[in-house]
Length: 182
Length: 180
Image 1: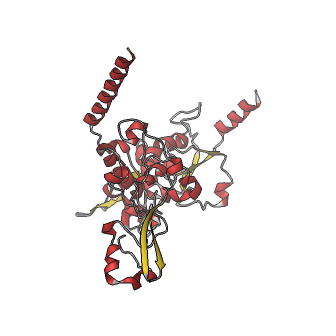
Image 2: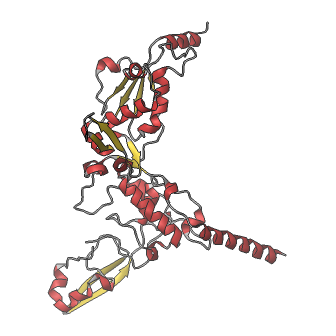
Image 3: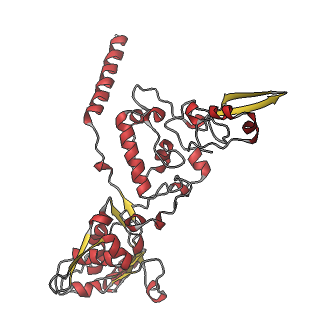
């Protein structure tokens, strides 16, 4: 994921400048789809490189989150492992789950979603989200993995105390709003 | 007798043929429903000594599904009769050898063991895929409703459909979407 080919123009600049485009710095030389794009212009002897923001492809279809808890808790959805249109939102194009700092979910939901994603992968429902050189067809897997499997979502542990705090918060909010009305 | 009543009477006294699609179905869950049709329990004239059962044709038995780790954990026991002749075969290994055997065993073991069991089992026709001989297919007059819905894969949705589906989270501003 972190190997970046260097375009012809930039390679000519210097060896030191290539270090800039190591992904640890958050910059990439070439990309078709990313939120941050790098533009390079050559004016005379000077090479000007600038990072520009692009708009997110999800911008128009995003559900607004007005509550205090995370977007999933707020919606109150009962997500199953077969709901691939929801689960694919938390997944990178190579199929791995995105970390909590990117998804912005709470700890419980993050754990639950990552288990559901792994279930969907094992059932072969998101076979096009996989590393490039992998066998994408689930029927060509080895041993028992090639046969159809489904999962029971009740096997995922849910920590009750977390939901208790959410309920308490909702109650407290309700009390506050009542007080302000009076 | 009304027209509907007459057809009901025909169906009761004739041997009907039912079709069942086993794709993404758990054979252990399907066994009770298939047993009903095989023994004729759905008919008002049913009696254990009356031979009023129907035929059931099961297709796509290679695509049956098991929950969780059942493919690895479920073992089928066989004993040759000689000492040291016991063997335990995992379900996936048995399915490799014969894709119809797990379904047949599931129905067979669900039924009560008596002298009619093997007679009733003769009316169950299992095929690993949808290639069914024509002389069997022409008899079929009814389809048994499947118990479990077939899950939809992500690549079956169009690109536009995935893009326009309501999104729960958005990417942070400095997120890099794809590798290069």
